[in-house]
Length: 419
Image (tube, rainbow, N blue to C red; front, side, top):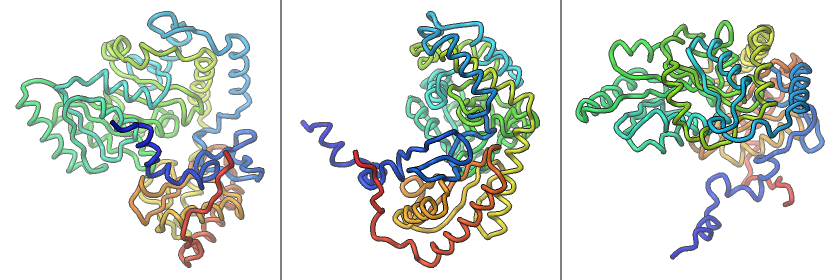
């Protein structure tokens, strides 16, 4: 019999294999100081493009006060226990009611985390005879939820409606053959890597041709898209056609937690059958109060979303004018596509951080194919015109170096913290 630990030590995985050079710098970096567009990294000030703080609420003085006051009044322990047993409160139910009204749905259930929540939603909704049809570029939390599903699943090419119809025909044929089960379609409001919106309207329109229910994970659309900020469904004019609307508090609201909105009878079923909430401690009261305040500001301060979009458009326009490929983004998520290997990418990241004061996330193999590099910039309402101009200059100069071969190195530079 093999020692399971021995196998793990022999193969740390495609990312973990670089840990001895990367830890604390390329992976698990530590940003310090007040949350904002500029923070400290290893003692140096950086313009930060890697924070999920779209509306700039993380360090807003009104938010800080509500968070602090709620922590002082309730502590982090209340309520104790899972909501079904002893952890419910009027405030949890108030937040659910306000979210349901905001999203135009009958009811809402709160969840402790987005990743955990979407996985458990899929598990609660789908039985072994049901078929799931999903977008090929769905987030890892959706993929892990699919792994829990004992039934069939069909994947369609990313945002390809023609292929979506093909997979729906396959799924429909299987259901007809089984003579039992139904179809759940899963996609995203905004795909967090490429920034393109899911084809929600086109999918909803196909309910006339196929019988299915639609679950949308709108982590990046909630608070950033739509006239009121209600998300990608509102933006595309098809919110009523989304059967289950899921999002997180971790992006536009800069908090912790998640929610699922939909028909009251279905949300009530999920409330009594979703294992990750039935068997987990309730969302702490300071987070509930903080999220109530954040939702109120999201609804009543449209200038936050306007500032976010102003910054995003300046950044994206500036990149395109300088010849950068930012793909098909139609959200504030701003990818920059380049060519190069992992070693070149890390050398470029070092140059951006050490010599230009730019901190942003980079995606390389094995997340994307070899020879490709994606920088993902997350603009926020807190960024300034000066931040944007300095960043555009930095990328122009480092891209020229990349193209000239200045970053060709044999190995990832060793920048790891001592452990």
